[in-house]
Length: 475
Ligand code: IFM
Image (cartoon, rainbow, N blue to C red; front, side, top):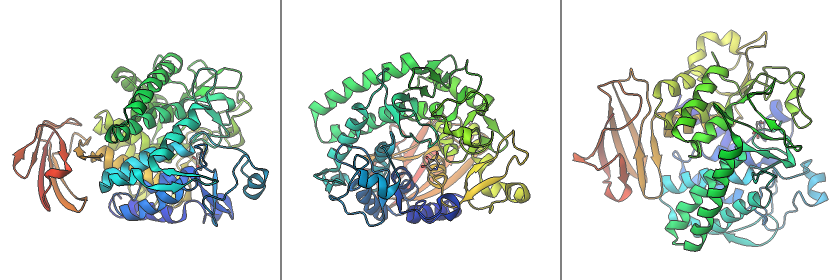
């Protein structure tokens, strides 16, 4: 899956986004911002140059207030576009308002691009905004932070606006999204690394201050015993509380609490355990449960779907990549691989009459436990699942994590794997990596050797690499 079919699907979604899918949306007149920025992540390690070109295009579709254009027209004319604040844009695209998450996807995508390519100069490249003005990539990222910071709700968390990642959660200008709060927290960490590299001390101080406030806010308002809540409705009522009769447990806040680096170890362990207990099925983890039936609120558009399908308690495929990554980051190799196998197309070759999709391609969602067709999957090819599962496997399970100055190798694998090898091209250098696991560990690196030399840790500076490298990692 990783080297061939997942990679192939990543390129297909990268090229087409959702634009060519008659199954998904009929004829569409442009690219969705969030989807397109996320899709880039799946091909960065395979073709950084292509990734860069698309990142520049998507930055040129960011409005000068920092938000992304929900839909980027096929004939996008950077610097001259109208925005969701203009009726002309709304009429032309059918998109009436900003989404809370769009521009926040730029952070992991740009970090991965610079990490993989070593192209640190990219941060200083000047790119136009969609409507007017231009700025460096660094400036674009700062404005993306501002966009969220200027749209906070009563708990000082980002407003959910027209949607966050979940198209079926309309939280509005007053409702708040914990998912976006975690994304924003993560974005601040990414930008701090860039700010350090640029020696921008004033901005580092700003980030330190606002990130601390945001972190405290999330901790004080969103943690409930064994889970992070999903957010707040416009009237302040909690979404995703344990006490709620429906939708009391949501997948993405748990995985993103870990990915963002905000969850404590204890919270991370409990939240991931709750996911496994309450959301996991034979075909992957449900996006939330129990499904909405009688207690949906006005912004819970998921009620449009039958229970156990799509956003209404279905097994949404894209978040499987995030739970694989979150489990891996915690060193839970067995769980990470279990989630991978539950949703891996190739692992369901013998179940084709139930799954119905091709056994080499991810779909958008799988019907879950309440459906008479449990396991049936839908909307093949054009789905963000391709890139999240790729990232979950490569950065998570295989543990290949490039950053600004080098690469960390931190696998999280099934304890039954005694040894495996990987070959990776990193910044033009060949890495031949052998991972040894004689004691049956799931995570954690004991020693790392580069060309025979024992390193201080499992972080390898890019400057120490030769054209050919033999790397041994002992778990
Ligand atoms: O995040 C969205 C995506 O943009 C389009 N498909 C559905 C996802 C979840 O709502």
